[in-house]
Length: 258
Image (cartoon, rainbow, N blue to C red; front, side):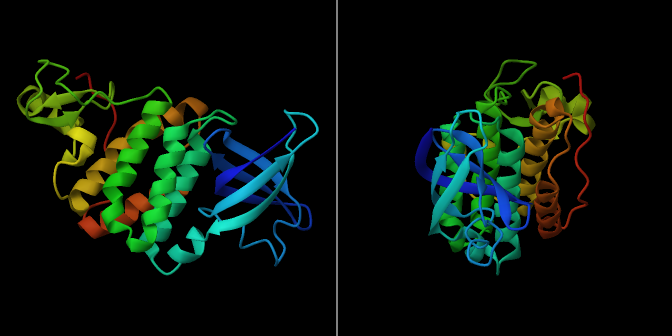
């Protein structure tokens, strides 16, 4: 058994004296692991850095085995992000979310293509990519079957003035209908509304609201159903954006009947 494909490095864990178990994301094979012999050696350590785009070859005798990996570097995303703390935080968070949330060896092409696009554009600056990162998390939730319903109000059925999301159901709520429960609802940022989510410029406060919203449902559904917390890298991205927004980095409360 073998395949060859472009892949994004999600994680690499040392094994033995110099080996590494590498977790990858590919378009056709999904999240897939393999053993990179000498993966932590001086010659290879930089190849298997989180976020790098590599061309990999996976070989195993049987399809359910871990198999072995060899690879060539295509795009050194990890090195390019190293000098920008926000870019590094975004890259680390995206890889950790994909590694922890996506099931093994199950293709999720939209998640792969979305992450590939983020990595390709990251050298141009992380801040302009935060809305796309938040939309990528929302798409990942949808691919996993936990999609948010943001098209109409859960209470009235209307499509105007949608400003809240129920933390229990993931459905949008209008300003008027949600007023009695406003303290328990999650703010719905405009960057998640409209065709393709493109409804105009956004800033740190809206990015923070978006990260709080998608983080709530990642924690409740994608990670909660596995009895795992959100990755520490995702929490660090939230804290960094909270600092940009000048806000208290405390996640929103859960539990609304709206």
